[in-house]
Length: 208
Image 1: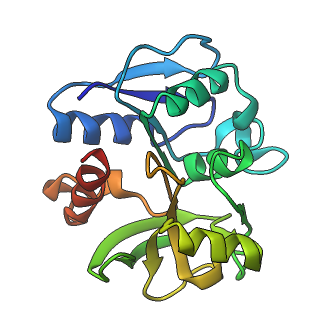
Image 2: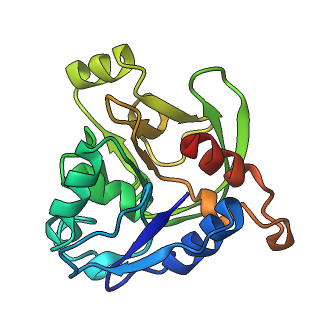
């Protein structure tokens, strides 16, 4: 499994993602700067968490127009996978590669704690680190109905921390090749970190 992590100014989880992918796949991912215009031939592209471009304008908005984004669109069109975590999820919605939008938490405060999410398909609970300020996932009723019909809801919170519609924590695109997720699975891969290993299961499941 060949992978690449896109690095933006303000990213703070790019190295965490790289270590997690190396641990899971056995191959160190390529670190690709956001200003590159060519993407290496890889199976997976990861958009990491952090504060790309200092979260100016809206979270993920400037990153959605980065030079590398046309290549990521081409990567998706070829049926290859993209994983966007936290700020990466925000980028995917701002680039209209996933439906909906992510806005300020309804409590207007940054959330940093462990949370529990359930796999939407069969309800299995997973423990996952949460760390975000703009994690409230919103979309209108027609788009929500369409997302449900397509099986596009990947994960739901068991206790909604941010006001997301229908307790949604993560969503797929129509072909299940793009996953946007607000909690941080890359932080729950190494048991030595003390945050469990449920994040490994999330990433492995997506990689197939």
